[in-house]
Length: 281
Image (cartoon, rainbow, N blue to C red):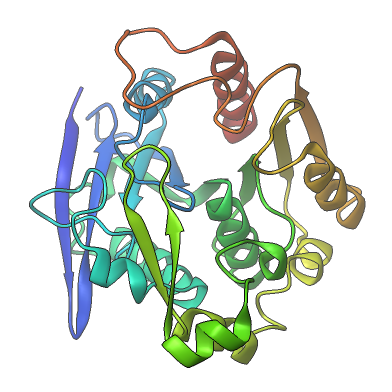
């Protein structure tokens, strides 16, 4: 059961992508599931590795990766050693990263292609990653199913995008405290400029309304970071979607970082079971 971690996908004139693959090497093609982490997130957060193993055990090909400007590095993909890169992140770069990763997985040069059914691709996005996955799924016919976990419904209202715009423009940078690491996380003003320049593309209501593929919306009813009403909004915009509330679950479905046991929290077990069934349907 191969687990390939911290693989590096180098790109011309762009920062590399660090990614993991969890799959059973059988030379039988399996549905591909690609997981997109959220804001101030990373592929090795908490118990995402246990989530990946659950998909692997269900005989799916599960990929998780770090967005190129999430603040991690090749040498240290956990947490945020590269705040200069973090400051230069934006939504467009994350969409570009996801696109490049999927192109690499489609490549004839992909050594794992015999284990991949690229006609059956599910995107999963958590929090901000849910928004990225939603836009990408709306734009690209290669995606067959979409699953959003605790997804945002409006990029324009997120703290990364809003704030004292006059001061932000004047100084060129604003800071958001990371409560766990105590780092002051910088956002350069280019983040807002990129959002405004691509506001139509980055409109999640527009994207949700254009999605024609199966869409499963999973959200904790006790989520304080992204309220449950945002899941209800996504469901309203895409009435064919399935909304699955997870009772008394928070933004990370009662997980935490670091995660010290080999069992998923009950709420996240429910999320994973539903997501595996949806991916295989």
